Image (cartoon, rainbow, N blue to C red; front, side, top):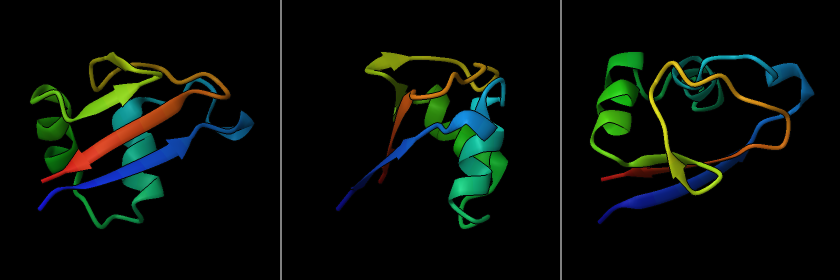
Length: 68
């Protein structure tokens, strides 16, 4: 069963790469390589749009991750 998580980028996250942000908010529960694979497979979106791991976040971006 997959698990869906939603995180909101805060002011301190402005300009941070998506993969770095997710590794921080998941408190290293998921490795950056695992996060990159989830992004590449389309299991991560930012404000309902598919993006690359290198995507730079803006304050208020809604990051949704589906962990199978």
